[in-house]
Length: 369
Image (cartoon, rainbow, N blue to C red; front, side):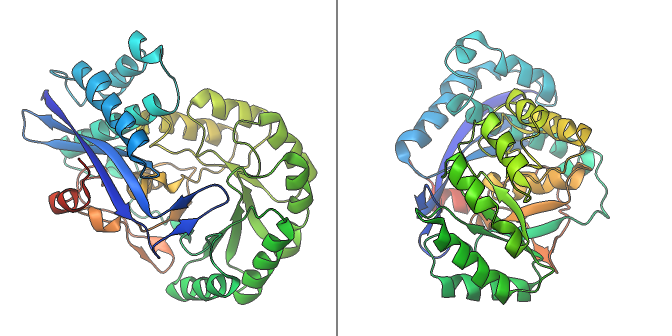
């Protein structure tokens, strides 16, 4: 089997509730920038990364796929995924202009598409190809009801509805200029849900270390499961200091672009829940390495849902360090086999591939350019 063509795609898909916000961002659409890899066997592999639906940056990622990576793939066997990852990552002209950000996100889309092809060629879902257990139960926690632009009443109503649906974990966005506002919102939601429901918070890197320490020491009062991205994403020493200063575990990883970055956090004792994102990290190939590294440190892996579930559902089912996965349903309408949660747990997908095949009619509807 040989690669004949690499097609690019760019979608803008509306988020739920018209507009959502965290401490740093406001969104009305989620951007999907990706690749469809065609082969002479008639199989296609789909891979993508997630963005904030900004045409300028979306097009930069798309052009990186189209002009930098695609020419290196023509004529290659797509099943040689790890060899091709090494070839693309170490291409001097690409490595010269970036080992993170745009180039790494473009590589993510390519690598995911290659794994999708590999699993389709083997006629099995990716989780099974990677040695996963079909009887594994992967618990879901819902982030799509805790946005920072929502009122307290909206948060309470959403939390109550999610618990009624069977979710055993929820996450709230925090990061107001005065963190006492966030504490009041956390307290209101904690009182509205059963004590056994996991309640996490996410500051999206908004605060400095002193503020995070003051805020973090109050989280024990509300049995907060983890404190996610409390301070600037690359501040290893700051996260390590915070981990020593508060009782609530720290979660981080969605903004880290390499296994080296994760290694620094792990060695410093600066993270407790490891959150690699295959759509930013360079794809599934390095994601598996990060997950193995976290497991070697006896730490749980909770994939970030930047891929809006599909890729990380497969990986979460496959890797023994994963038992929990974020649920954000924005892209469900796009896929042939969208992720399904019942009774608080993800159903196990059965179709061959990585679960990333996008319906042609959705490409037509949401496609840009």
